[in-house]
Length: 320
Image (cartoon, rainbow, N blue to C red; front, side, top):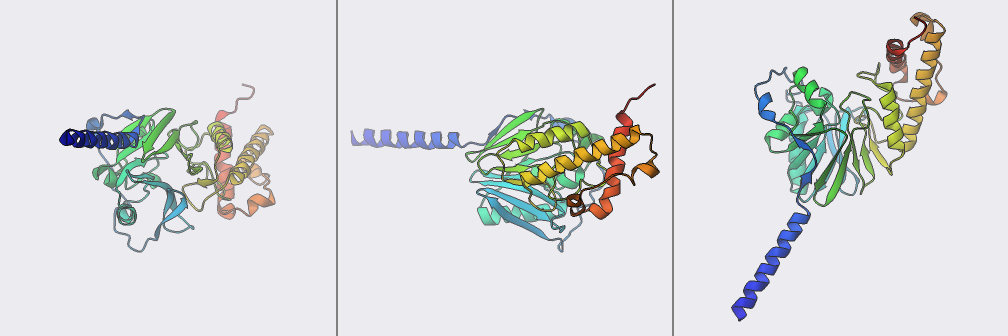
């Protein structure tokens, strides 16, 4: 009788442990990618592969289980959020091959876990370099579906994703939920916004800014989707926004950026419709004093006008 009770107690304990593990088992709603077809694809040399021991790098807490990794200085050349759980870590945009092993080892040393997921914000090499190292270590690489064509077509020396999605995807890790959203083509057609609802943190790389002008001439740019994405951001319950560079931002920063982008678009469109040449037009775009104080104004103002001029000119249809 005693043995029976002991066996029953052990079975109940095992069942409870299994239930606990099941409740916190890592899972996601992504679609698996048949990566074997890309096994022998041609890739270009990796310009971030050479050792870079003097490149600054950090991993600092943002809120709760969400941290932020950075490399180099601007104050941060590249950055991404990191979720730490007892089931493993989720890393957004490793950014450089020469710093990714430090990030992997730092997470292991400080928190005692490996990297379970790597999430791409978009298929631009400067953000996703180093992902191949983490994939080889066993991490699951996730991206919006359109990223595959860009990665393979441009022969990028990065990991081809293991999982992809079209509009939305959820990752559950260590009892935390991470939401991935593709709102619209904006800065690339593979853009993913990553939301951590528990910590009210958002990864909004290259669409969002932190008192900074958009980069140069709006590379890989879709104006309508950019504004649509910023509108979505402003509706979220968010306190911390990582923009992939520089420093953390707020919703007030994105509200100001939205106003800036719309003003620039409307001014350029109006000047084009007046028939002004480029030599006339760029001199007639006006900037509020607030924008003049943003980082990059001196050297990115004219490229911003140029990029918007290109967008407007390629899409307007007058009398013809």
